Length: 331
Image 1 (tube, rainbow, N blue to C red):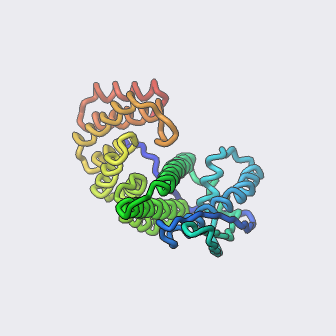
Image 2 (cartoon, helix red, strand yellow):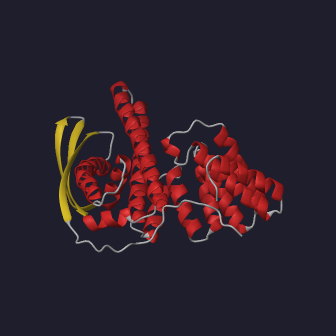
Image 3 (spheres, rainbow, N blue to C red):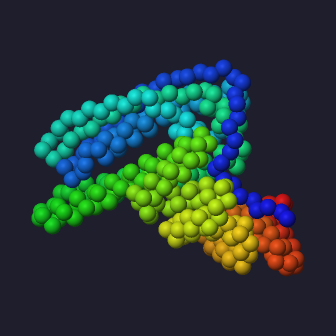
């Protein structure tokens, strides 16, 4: 029987024959901490900005390495690659009091880039690379949204007049801190996933979920690891949770369907693939959700055709295969 087509961010290590070159970069990041925030989390926010600075610098080198081997790599993939292979080797913090209510936290990081890791990335399949870029793009958007929430809370500080207001703002900061730390764990998990260390990746995704049960991204990626390990019931739980948390993440319905198909639950698989098709026809896509437009529909039709084939409904099988073919998927 034909197998489902599924793009997971999982691949094989590929040995490099080129001589390794290690470059070191220094990044600096600052964060202004209000007296409503915790020092430890403020340090992590400054460190994140310092890492971004180092990543941007290292990205220039990574891009030059891809040009040496004549690889066609887009800017968003350069950023994803650099973020995943950047290794932090030293972190230093400095703080100074700006006024009675504000402390400036400065983080300085030193990070290494190994040219061999660039070679390993380029040896990954296009599907795996695209999947990793997608996850990085989703994380970037999540971090941007979190930054907006923090900025809004700091704007609200000017209106704090009572103890009740103060308590409310403090609780909101604490909630945002958990979201931030959850996203940090998720990012670390992606980096270990990129290095094919699946055990650590799964542990970090789990920690991300424990910090923020509403982290759809962590549920989705932990689900892919369960699926790869053939723990299909666990995969269904994570994919379903991710879909409930982010109903526009249509791929999750595909993945729930794939997992049910692997268990022989063809009716449930058919239901989820049909739901994905319905949503895909009525959704305005953007880069956040990875597979888009015709590509997502073609994938969904093709795999629903496999379900009909398993059920012996060959007329509908052929109809879905024909739809997939018209949308660009032939097998």
